[in-house]
Length: 157
Image (cartoon, rainbow, N blue to C red):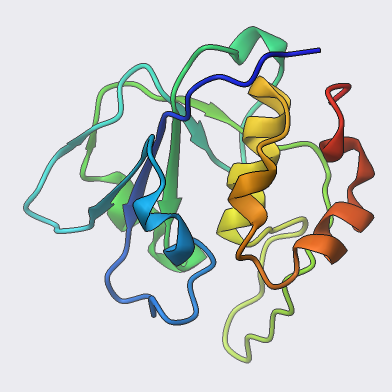
């Protein structure tokens, strides 16, 4: 059984996204979770962290101990936000998981296996450190997400 580590999560957030609809908004006061608002003129250092990215090697036990870096934006805006990142974060993807978040975009197709941001953070930390159920306390679809992905609720992930 893994002993839960102190959270170390850095989130680069696109201010164009609605905070009212954002699944990460309840984490704003969580110790160990830091939000930085995207500004094209501001640099952000993410060196030594794990960047969750859909087109990368799958996250695994060898990645334990690194801080987590998440870019919270619409998929089409990801390249613009990544241009402001310094350092060499290690890109990692999540294994195949199923979202519980009800998506409905009429303009863009979400990537296969796309998750709500809170789901992605919870899953990555469950893999790296063991479950942190407190992260999902305010997530409306937490029960459904965990039912669809039962391996994320135990230390056997």
